[in-house]
Structure formats: C-alpha cells, structure tokens
Length: 130
Image (cartoon, rainbow, N blue to C red; front, side, top):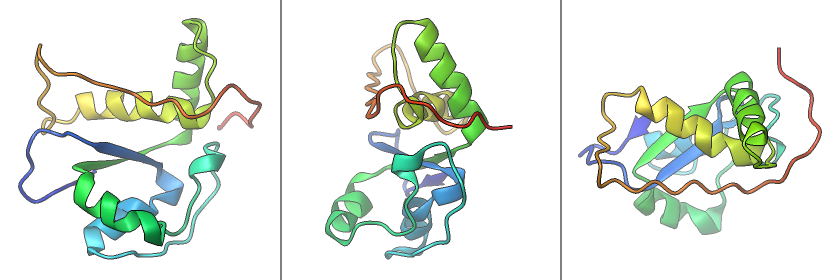
C-alpha cells in the first residue's frame, strides 16, 4: 500500500491489480512511471501507464493506493453475486481493497465513517484464477 507522507485517515482510495499497479508506482515516484503489466482478471484495470490528463487529479486527490490480487477479487465477485449484486472483477475490486484496508492498522474507521464503493463493471465471464 502507498500512503501519503502525512498519513491522515484515508479519504480517497484507489485500487489496482497487483499485476498492473502503474498508479501506485507513479505516486511513489512522484511522476508518471510506466510499468510492465501482467495478466489479471481485471481487464479494464490492466494499465501500464497513468493517463496524462488524469495524473494531476490523481496525484493530488488520492490518499491511499491499494493493490489487489486476482484470487481475492474472484472471491468477492462470488460474494457479491450471492448477495444479488451482479458485478465483474473490476467492480468487485473495490470491495477487495476495502477488506484489505480493514486489516491495515493505518486505516482509522469509526462509527461516523462513510464508505462508498464504486462498482464499474457488470457480470461477465473470465478465467477463474488458480
């Protein structure tokens, strides 16, 4: 995980596949840093370079960057489907990131915290990760 230096309670969290974490690499470097990507079930999030037009907004607006693995995302796709939410891997990635953050001691949520997860993909076929 990448936190800004002052490490306040997270406000905006970005999520990327572990195999395509160009935003995290760029945030850590302080400038757009292209990476070599690997395979992921999160096809729509498999990017090797942060958008030049989005970089300034992301660099100034993201408080925490989280990477998620395919198997955990697959489990959360199944979880969401079992609760009537027909999302795909890119949509479930936000839930996976939230679960990962709950295990992170730097995350400070309390009874007044508000969490909004954006699910950006409907159900679709994909190869189940091993």
